Length: 519
Image (cartoon, rainbow, N blue to C red; front, side, top):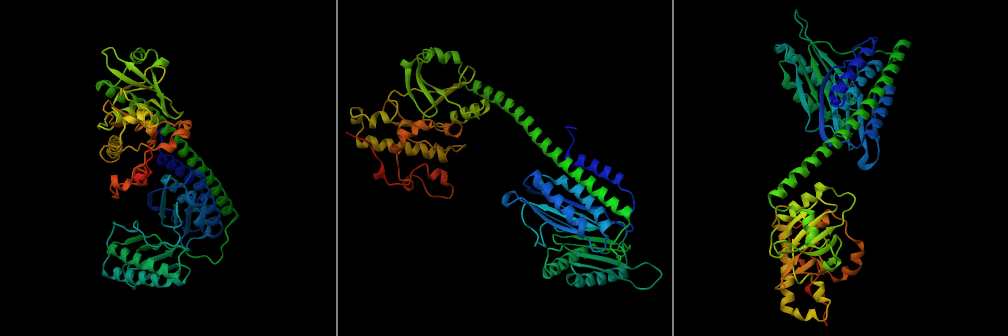
């Protein structure tokens, strides 16, 4: 059953339901499905969907129509169901049972279903006063065509129903005929939903009738509109309206059986569909994660970005404390020397619980493609050992905070050099925001994340990591006062492309707020 689709499952339930229903109706319930329309808006949840169905079922069983809402605000599910005016209550329940069994095929999306005897619709917003919509259509019979006399009768009967329905509780039936040897009688039914006003009903029927007349000269046509239903035919499909609304005790039993069985069917189908969707997503997620890791590892190997853990362990002296350069929100950094003499900086990462190998490799793949003179260059990574490591170019002067907070080193930064560092940092941020295929928001710009090369040029570090790693809250206690603040409107244009998150990256304060601790 794992591969069964919701539509196949619901079809099996429909067959079971039909086999359980004996033919006890005194008229024709007209439970033929004309159109099932699935929308593209997600309904809130299985419980709300089922709750709305249950409420509609109770109301339809009592009075032939129902309006229901389950949940509140964004989680709400709205529904309406109504039988056409010439159906008895028993036939109405039979038609509704068919609609209720088939409509869940649309779940988890919104949907509506038109049958020849009833209508049903479920949405995630309040739609009760709508009478026109983009899904409105007419459906024509294509078996026989009729002559001029029938077409005249059809137009006359349609017009009569359109006029009578708004003032007759939203429903009207009409027929027009001329005595003769051949059958040229036209039978018409018009029905508006009870949530519409008389004016809205009239507007809906006028539009629906104009559309349905396009079916002539075919012998049958239907208009399926947001707020109403119309049908004409050369066959008398109209049921006689009984003065007494009662039915036999056997019929009442049948109604109870139908309601109980259909309730069980809908609950079971909804639960099965929800579970199947969740289970399939979990399976696909696991398969995709494993495949993504293999692909990304292969890409990193091809680009010489994947370091062996043993290589980095040896280069840093087994991560000796003597080689420790510093510690930040994302990990501890060590100086290392490779076998060929190259100096590197190795960062041991602190993962949060949600981080996966696929996320890590994907992050490395993105960051390694970002190349700019004011960004720290990523040389590769290692995820094969007991921990995850990033390998960067080694910058001998380390971070900016070691200069601006040191009374001796700070003398090496005159105001010209400081201005160059400010401009370099801004250019690096602009490149991350605007000029890369994957736009990156740093979200942790501070002096300790701005490194200086041998010529004291600024290079931004830790870009991209804030999206996947949980920041060390302790580090913020000491660094939030020392953020470099640059007047954003002087660095980046205020085009619509500059979204709020990117504008916030460059603090909107003037350059006089830029604080440099000096002697």
